[in-house]
Every structure is written in C-alpha cells, then in structure tokens.
Amino acid sequence: VGYGDIIMGGRRGEEKPEDLDDLIQTSRLVATIFILVAAPCSGMAVAQASKSLLASRKERVEAEVLSRTLSLDMLHDLDADGLGVDRIGFLCAALMALDKVYAQELVDILEHFQLLDRDRNGK
Image 1 (cartoon, rainbow, N blue to C red):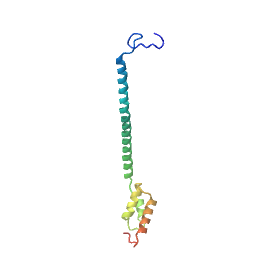
Image 2: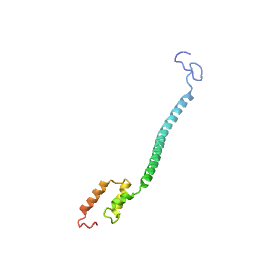
Image 3: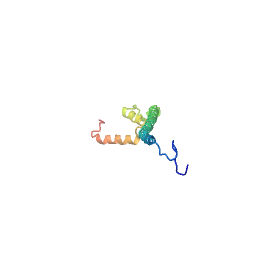
Image 4: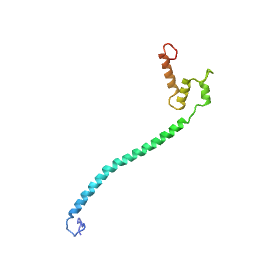
C-alpha cells in the first residue's frame, strides 16, 4: 500500500462500493435531521427549566412578602390623632409593608387627589 492508497473493504485499487456512497448520504441526512430537531428541543428544554426556576422563585418571594404583617408600632404611628386607623391609612401602610409602593408615591397621589377635590369634602 502506497501513500494515498485507500483500502476500504476490498482489494487495492478497487473503487469504493456504491452502497458506501448511499450510506454516506443517508448518514448526512440523518445527522442534518438530528441537528434540526435537537437544537430547538434543547432550546425548549432550557426555556422550560428557566420558567420552572422563575415560577418557584416567584412563589417563594410572594410567600415571604405576604408573610409580612403590619407592626403595632406602624399602626400606632398611623393613628396620630388617637381616633383609630382609617381605611386609607391602613391601605397605605399595607401597600408599603408589601413593597408595592413607596411612601413618597402615596404622598404624591394623595396630594393630586387634594388638587382635584374642589369642594374639599374628600369625595
């Protein structure tokens, strides 16, 4: 066997069999189909895993936030006039405790309401 000679299942000098060409073509076709199917499936698997991780994190954060309660000190601070805590005060405190709004945002909203309340009756 000399340099560059290829022996493939036959004797030296023979050309490769026809069915080997068919096998190569079939292998290429199968590999192409596999790649075209495997890549999207892998992407979907990663997306599903990420979705599951995000869902579990969201549940954990929601449970932690909902477990927060309004402290007695906060309720006492809301009752500055000694007449009890009204619905608006309780709602504002609850929203801040749940990290849904910041105090300044509530102040801005209530100030905007006062500007719109022409007869100053709160309705």
